[in-house]
Image: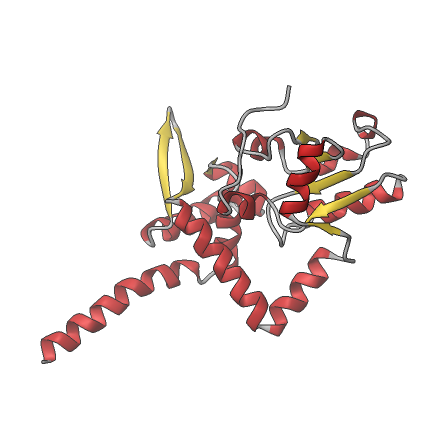
Length: 222
């Protein structure tokens, strides 16, 4: 009987390795970035505002928890999510925290800023079929290249103010970014609205689009 208790404890401790790997805000941020595209340690460190050695240590913890995998290209090591299940786990963790922890919901609201008008995925798909909308991807170019909504125009948020003339003035724009907690799309909608453009935000983002198994295109913009 004692052996069975020990085996049970060991089983739960092994499962807990995943939870321990997730128990860091910075590691969750790294997963959020990797849900968009694979990256080198250096690129992840820059995006997450970490030192390279600190980012590397976090990534090793994620790898030990079975959440990320690597590949080598020359002298560079690229990190990626171990499987789509990891993206789903991250999204579920985020949603549970937002739903059940009031402090999380408040933090999300403060981070995203004043709410902008949203468009659902189904509404956007209908609009795309009718050809009466411009889909705008405001993520960094490397994330767009790794996978984007078919037909989306790529203009990273930090370039949007200087590239408005590339967008038609008489067509509504729907902007999207990484996911429901990404601030790039609402910032883009606010900027476009201030410049007199009709603009709304996709209610979620690329993470949820992939998890819904909707069509995705890869490749850099023309």
